[in-house]
Structures are given as structure tokens and as C-alpha cells.
Image (cartoon, rainbow, N blue to C red; front, side):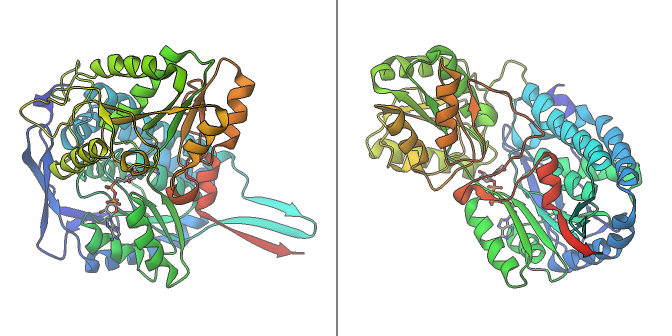
Amino acid sequence: MARADFTPADRGELYIGGQWRPARGGGSIAVEDPFTEQVVAHVPAGTPADVDEAVAAAKSAFEPWAALAPSARAEHLSRLHQSLANRSDEIATTVTGELGTPIKVSHRVQTGLPLTVLDGYIRLAKETAQEGEIGNSLILREPIGVVGAITPWNYPLHQVMAKVAAALAAGCTVVLKPSELTPLVAYLLFDAVHEAGLPPGVVNLVPGTGPEVGQAIAGHSDVDMVSFTGSTATGRRISHLAADRIAKVSLELGGKSANVILDDADLARAVKTGVGNAFLNAGQTCTAWTRMLVPAAQYEQACELAVQAAKAYAMGDPFDETTRLGPLVSATQRDRVHGFVQRGRAEGATLLTPDDVPDRGYFVAPTVLADVDPKSTVAQEEIFGPVLAVIPFGDDDEAVAIANDSRYGLAGAVWSGDPDRALAVAKRLRTGAVDVNGGAFNPLAPFGGYKQSGLGRELGVFGLEEFQQVKAVQR
Ligand code: NAD
């Protein structure tokens, strides 16, 4: 796919009750291409009145949708899968255009992953038992109700799909607010929803800003559960709003994950894979291993390997097949990341990589920082850009202590020549996921955070169960 294939049009409507219709307010949101720095399309800025209508549509659709057999819901989702798969190229192009993900990664991750996740929920809807028994009790798993889904911009279709597919498979109905920075791909999803003929009101789209639409969803008395992915600060705000009515909240929040490389690891492989993980999607990845922990005796060698690996991350037009590092999503995000790098240097870190960037586009160069104090800002705060902090440790206990010295706990990695030693360290990490020796991402495994990285789990059967209530019927 080439840049010429990215020809987004303004979208003027919301999707409510199975129909495209104008927003109640007159406002609009400009969508920017972060490489050209040009506005490429507009979408409506929804309002709390739009949220009221969308929630009412989802509420009236709930009973019949929940009453369908799971296999019947799976058939609806299969048609949605087909409609989406037919749009694969357009999805990849749209995400590359509105977010800046290199086109190869867009095909594989931004398009491929949500389709895989949807496929997984089609199968789980058919296979997962809705009933069980404990003694004289019949145990029923029932959908929780109307779900408000609020999502960020970094994996804009995947994060939507992780919620929408699971909620629909469980029998819930949904009101979605995608990120205002990347709303265009959500429109492609709802084109597919419409084409697939999902029952009216089962899933609704209200684009808009967080303070307007997001808060109206999170605080709505008829929203039974809020499923949120985004920053920890916003997650906290959403929790407060939902707490007033004791509504369930599931939160997928920030991270500051550690890549722990033990002294008997294949250092070259561990560093190269670690750099790739940290720079995926220009570092705008919640699970990014942004702290690389290496034995003090191998510190210099690891830093050299990291610098070499960083050189391979060619910046450029994300539609160019040779580009490995696209721009960040916005000028604000770029400036924020630059601010962190400056702060890191002011707090004693050494910049090992060049910081020149292309003339155009919101780029941050692939950045490796050495001599990073584990207590310093760049080792503690989520940066959300291509910035890797390399930190030395003495022994395994110290590595674990540094890794766990974080308010976050989303992901991480351990490398060792001895799988048992690696697993022993993995078990000590206070984090929702750990990859041992480059173990592959599993889209059916539970995904979520310890500590301030979140509450609840997404993906696979754990993700499905988030959207269910449990009832005991005594007989
Ligand atoms: P963000 O919190 O600024 O925004 C996320 C969503 O919340 C957007 O749709 C936004 O409009 C909305 N929002 C903002 N303020 C709101 C409010 N007051 N009330 C209701 N909704 C509001 O996050 P972001 O900048 O879009 O995304 C980056 C963050 O997301 C990072 O912290 C990253 O780690 C996190 N993230 C987490 C995961 C995960 O699964 N754990 C995945 C991806 C991203």
C-alpha cells in the first residue's frame, strides 16, 4: 500500500441504533496525519446528548441480544469478521495515515491482531460453558449489561476489538468512544458492523473528546460497566465517576516494563529483541520493555549492542516499506517525549544515540539512555516514545528489586540460558505478563496489569468473563 492509497474522507455522522445519523452538536474534530502534519479529515465531536441516545439504544438492544444463544451471537460476529477482513488493506492504510505506524507493522499488528482477536471470540462464544454446578446450585454466567468502551490511539482497532468482541460475545451491548486522535479506523469498523447487519443498538459509536463524551459515558447511570484503555490518570478519573453508582470498571493502563537480562543469557539476542520491543510503534506501546536491566559486568557491551540495534530503526514516511520508525501520533506527544529525554539527561543519564530527525513529521529519534538511575524520572515514568533506559544490576535479587520498583506492573521479560532460572525470576516480577527468552505474544492469554497498570483482564476467556455476572440458583 502506498501513500496515494490513503485518501480519507470527512465522516459527519455517529452510529446509533443501527443507523448513521448526525451528531447533536455542531462541533468537529480534525484528524491529522503525523507525517505530513496536515489535517486529513474531520469527524463529529459528540456530546453528552449523543451519549444519552447511544446508551438508550444499547439498553433497549440488550435483552434480545443477551437472550440469543451464544452460537447465534457468534454467527453475527462471523459476518462482522468477514466484512472487516474485506477491509484489511484499508484498515492498515488508515492506521498508518492517522497514527504513523510503519505500513508493514500496520498490516501485521494493527490489522492482523484485531482480526485474530475477533476470530478467537467467535470460537469462545461457541465453546465457553455458560452454566455449571456447585452442590445444589446452578451457576449461570450472564452478560453484565450495557458496556461503555473508551479507547486510546496507539493500537486503535485492536484496543477496540479487545473490548467490543468480548462484550458482544458475552451478550453485552456497547457504546464506544474511540480516541479523538485516531477515530478514522473506528469508522471502518462501524461500516463493517452495518454491512454485517448486527442488530440495531447492539454496538454504537460516539466519537468525541474525553472530557465531553468519555466522561458522559463513564458517569452514565445506565452504563453497567466501563471498559477503559488509556493512561493511569484518566483511568483514575473514570473509576471515580463509576464509583458513584458502583458500576464495574475494567482498566488497561500504563506501563514501565523491565527487560531483565541475566548473566547467562544470549546477550546479543536479548538486547536486539529488547530494542525491537521498546521501539515497536515508535515506543507507543503500553507493554514496551522500556527499562533494559543488564548485569554490571556486561553493561558496556549491552549498551553498544543497543546502540547498534537502534541504528536499524530508519525513520521516514510510514508508507515507505523500508521505514522502521514512524512519527509519534502528535506534536504534543513528540514534545512530551523530548521533555522526558531532556529531564533524563539533566538527572544524569547519558544519551548514546544521535537525536537528529527528518525535517517533516512528529519524529523522535530512536533513543538509548545509559547511566540511568532506577529512581530517576526516565526510569519511573511512562514516556510513550522510542526511548530505552539501560540500567545495570549486581545479582538476580537486585534485578528483581529494580524491576519491581515501579508503580506499574503490566509486562516484562526475562532472559537466561537456564529456563528454570528464568522462570524463577519471572515468578518474582509483580506484573501481568512476562515473556521468557522471547516467548511469543499469545492473543488468547489474559492481558492486564498489576498495581497502577490496571484492573481486570482482556483477551481470551479471561477477557470474556470480565463482561459476565455470575448467578447462583439453588435447587
Ligand atoms: P488517555 O488516557 O489520554 O486517553 C484514552 C481515552 O480516554 C481516549 O479516548 C480519551 O479521549 C479518553 N479520555 C481522556 N480523558 C477522559 C476523561 N476525563 N474521561 C473519560 N475519558 C477520557 O490515553 P492516550 O494518551 O490516548 O493513550 C496512551 C495511554 O494508554 C498510555 O498511558 C498507555 O500506556 C495506555 N495504554 C494502555 C494499554 C493497556 O492495555 N494497558 C494499551 C494501550 C495504551
